[in-house]
Image (tube, rainbow, N blue to C red):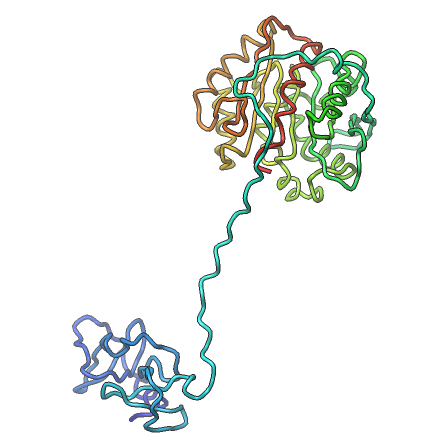
Length: 394
């Protein structure tokens, strides 16, 4: 039997060889290893046949120059270890024959299963029809939220916004958040002002258990414009608001803001609806729910209005349950003639699934018969739509 050190010396200076044209060895002694195992017989190279290692055991000191013994019968011992003879060939004894534990086998790591999605028990309507909020929802209720005016220094300079927090707001709890934009000629105070008084609808919905307590923010695009406000939203408004108020974002880092996108919504009326579509196109990675009210996508023309929205989804590789759009307007609204064709195009496109049951689809268009372009009607669209937000893919 040749020692392993001698075997290594014998291959020094030998030219590299190819398996092509070389016979299989009759024995199992290995003299050289590259992508194959080589022996020398009759003063020429030969390839070691697979039968030499047919027991599949490779956990020994001699492998791959000599096979590993399947048993523990010692025939000879030298500096390398203990040797046996099996099938008329030398073999090295495995570590277990010396009382040494076998080397642990490398096992494939277990597959990490995605956590099960939260199953919502919210009772959706599959084909929702317009319904005005009952009169009592438009009145002050016993459990009123608070409205705070906040000032911040953003990418467009100093600016202000209003923040609605629900009755019993607790900084230690997490809240969904809805950013709602005003229309042209208006400002951040319009929605919670005397002309709209959206807070009364919010308070009553929450008090009656029809809407989970949430934060509602009314910013303004008046220091930018409706179509470019998305930049200020991403870089200034969200970091400011969610750095101060308690939302599902663990921090205001881009990663944590993106991770909490399904707890964040954006909507707007008229020019604010144009803002909503631009937020969809450019901030879909950080916002999951959208409520465009009486306004179409201003970022494209014709059939491209719908196509660009579909492409934004596909660009991020989002699944069909990872974004939701609830659009609305009145049949007599000045926005209807432009908005309706876009909605019809979206109904025919992947990845949109048309239904107001967001457990089954992701896109709906509510048309209020006879209603025109006025907040007095639009606040009822919010009454209809907002309770269906924030139930899916949490």
